[in-house]
Each structure stands twice: as structure tokens, then as C-alpha cells.
Length: 289
Image 1 (cartoon, rainbow, N blue to C red):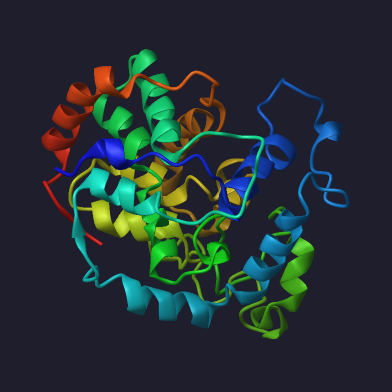
Image 2 (cartoon, rainbow, N blue to C red):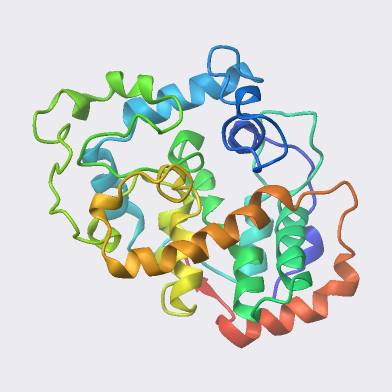
């Protein structure tokens, strides 16, 4: 296993800035602030957020998603241990958010430790640790709008409950009579496994870890950024009974991902033996990326 201590770096780029904006401005923790204090799309906290979603919503077309799946889901780019992937991810040159000094490993450890502290299954703890490893896509030339941010189905009408939904007017699929209809290319009740989601780290990591983790963990990984579904209750018409049975797991994971950050970093040297054993229990020494 690679030297996990190489995972250091405190910069945060536009992708993490977007995620932080989503937490603070778009999808707040229930009960913390009045809903009117959030979703301020006219004056977001960071100018980069609007541009991020403009690019994301303009370019995430059905053809784009199909092309990226064909390009990346062969999983033939590199073999790495999970912690090598974390170190690889943290070599990114980020574009700045000076308000948060939290590197990737610290965020993942805080997420995992919060899950562990609540007494959940060990595979749930592992999911907290690895759920963002798909962000290594950035290091293979993918722009951040094709890696992070909210995810949504392509090939059917875009919900108005998606963040900055007005930017879908610039998406070529919005002008297609089939792709802009509610069923689009899908049958009602077809199940989310048969739906093409916008391309990003969630879908990518799902395919990497599919052979190794329980089904609830895979749903958490694949759909944790699908806020229009698990928070806004959209797209139920695409779901089957299995999706609905898994939805509570996705909702259970979401608060740990968004609200586990704290200013005191975990003691990695103390935690390292536990997580090395946990990874070895479920995952091979190297993963195909």
C-alpha cells in the first residue's frame, strides 16, 4: 500500500467550492436556517458557482454521457490502491476557496468517523471513506463540471428542481422533442439502473467498486449527488420498487457527507490501522481505474 501520509494539500478548487455552496446555500441541513435564507441563485456566495453550473448544464447531454461512459468505464487507465488514489487526487492544482482548509483525506476520514461514531455497519464506514475517490477523473483531463456537482438523468426532461435549472436552456437536448419530454428515452418505472445519469465521479466510482460492496453502499456512492431525487423528491416516475427500498440508505448517508466537517482534523496515525484493516476486508489491494 502506498504511503498514505503523502495525502496532504490544503487547497480547494472550484469543484469543492461548488459542493460547499450546495451544502450552505442550496441544500441546507433541515432545521438550521429558514429555507428563505438559502437558494439565493441571483447572488450566490461565489461567482464561480454559477459558471460551474452553466457549463455543467450546457454540456451534460445524452451524447456527452454516452461518450464518457465509453471512454472511462473500461477501467483500464491505471491500477491503484485506494490510498494511492487519494494521493493521486490530491496532486490536483486547485482553484481556491480560502475559507476551508480541509484536504481530501481529512474530509473522508471525518465522514467515515462520524458514521462509525453512530454505530453503523463497517461497510457503511468504508463507504464514507471512499465515496469521493472517483474525483481522480480530474487528473485525466476532465473539467470539474464533468466530475463534481449535482447529478441528474439525461435523455429525458430536466427537472426544474435541479440547481440552476435555467441553464438547461443552453443544453441541446432541451430543444429535442423526445429528449425534452418527461419519459424521454425511458419507460416509466424502468429503474434507475437503466437510466443514464450526468457524468461524474459518482457514476465512475460505482463501476469501480461494484464487485466489492453491498447494494446499499453502491446506491450511496452512485446517487449521493442526485439531490433532485433524494432531497427534492423528483424523478420517482423512473424508479422501481428496488430504488425506493434503497432511497432511505442514500438519505442516511447524505448528512454524514455534508455535515461531518469540523475544524479539528482526525488523528490519522491513530486511525490508520483500523482503516487499513477495513479496506483489506472489503477491497482488493489494487483497484482498476
